[in-house]
Length: 570
Ligand SMILES: *[C@@H]1O[C@H](CO)[C@@H](O)[C@H](O)[C@H]1NC(C)=O
Ligand SMILES: *[C@@H]1O[C@H](CO)[C@@H](O)[C@H](O)[C@H]1NC(C)=O
Ligand SMILES: *[C@@H]1O[C@H](CO)[C@@H](O)[C@H](O)[C@H]1NC(C)=O
Ligand SMILES: *[C@@H]1O[C@H](CO)[C@@H](O)[C@H](O)[C@H]1NC(C)=O
Ligand SMILES: *[C@@H]1O[C@H](CO)[C@@H](O)[C@H](O)[C@H]1NC(C)=O
Image 1 (cartoon, rainbow, N blue to C red):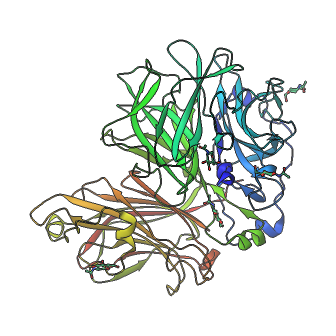
Image 2: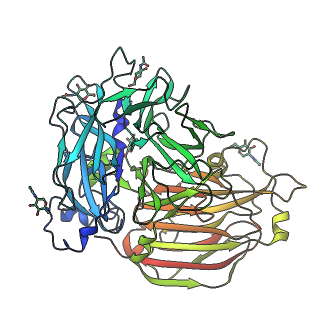
Image 3: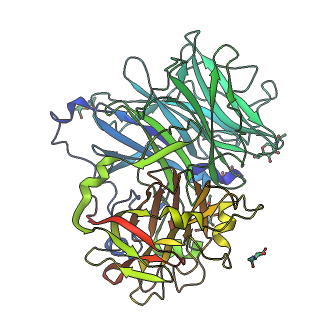
């Protein structure tokens, strides 16, 4: 599917020190959100969405965050040939100003679409963009663009290199011309040369092709790809970055203190539309990436998010020394509904991402800036959710736009009584989808985007199983069930599930960001994430309710629950 490429994102964090001096810059009022769109029930309040039409696609330069996203200026559907680099900036990752597109098709090397790519900040502090152009022969080629005016803090205008295209697929380099896209942020290898990796496909082999360059203009294909795996199909939007072994600080792309870091390779598989990552080592001598034991770069690899989340990218936020992950979230409604709404797709709340203590999983948490949108807080102290079917409403919060965090506790005695997991239950989504799964420990959790009488709700919950009858080891599953999310029939209501790598003898936490038609869940303090899209008919705006529930047979304690109403961002 050649037309899946544009969910891509270039991430770019440019931090601007001259913000203070330039506080009164007159911005293009390029994207005006028409009222008929502004007032729609499913339009989100605090997630980044383009003013209209279809989107998908980020940097920090001199204190200003830049989000570049794949955007179709002409409609709420994907039209590869029309794709431009939409551009928005922010000082806090939450409130965004949209500018006119940074890059539009105009040259033979990108006339059929300006597709995804990445930003690299050069050692002199200047950002450059590498992006895929769909050229006049419909070949995928790699192009370079530079800011026209570096004193403009918003970097509104970009100049394409006269040398474009810089890399062209051909018979000599054996690159597949319809499967060569989404170059990563460049890094410098031991030999002092730049490197980029680009997604590709040869037969059913997915690969991340490696190129090197001394000057960022002339690129040479390396004899070996950075990594590949057979049977996976096309690798879209590869992302390759270091993470610190011992703490949650972000690490810049060109950091090679080998004892201190691990590397992550993420690929977006166009076969499944999910983002999979492995953790491993970048062998600088052989110039290849080697996943750690237990990781395979295919659809058995862990996912950033077990719901809807694709074509994500990270960038290093040099201002706050963290690595930030941005993902694109598609609609779950039919295309005709998207056409009626006049827009489609949005960005998940940016997440800080780091290596968890186990060294085997990444952990994600909404950037702290989001907390500035919190207003009224509702708080529960200790409450028991009695076994056998308890549903308790959380009153006093704008349930259609909220940030909720709840800490559950199950008694050790009850944990010993948990059902044993069936031997074949290795797929959490399947476990969550089984309507007949017997009770015991759970399900307990939240019912969000719910109508007053529960004609509609989306339930987000935990279930706990024992590994074996005689064992004190447990498996915790987190589910997001959309099957009752809307009285409307046409939407995709797949139930999602993820294993959460925590011991239930400790507290089980769930954080849920609710925003009109999107629900983002973070289980176990960010060890497992599930994002879903819902379109209720009754549970709209003020008619939306929030409940905590326990449908298992044993009691579950809520140690605390906080729910905040959320303001809308700009
Ligand atoms: C648009 O792009 C597609 C796929 O790359 C190509 O087949 C088609 O010819 C292009 N259309 C035009 C009008 O250039
Ligand atoms: C560059 O940007 C600065 C700040 O916005 C502006 O004052 C200046 O006029 C711009 N220069 C050109 C050549 O456009
Ligand atoms: C080239 O990529 C296309 C996807 O665009 C794929 O269908 C095809 O099998 C690839 N061709 C070869 C020779 O690998
Ligand atoms: C996005 O959602 C639309 C329906 O709204 C669907 O047709 C399309 O296949 C989806 N694309 C991806 C990449 O998930
Ligand atoms: C539940 O249903 C699945 C198939 O949907 C079946 O394989 C399983 O045996 C059933 N379990 C019980 C306990 O009935």
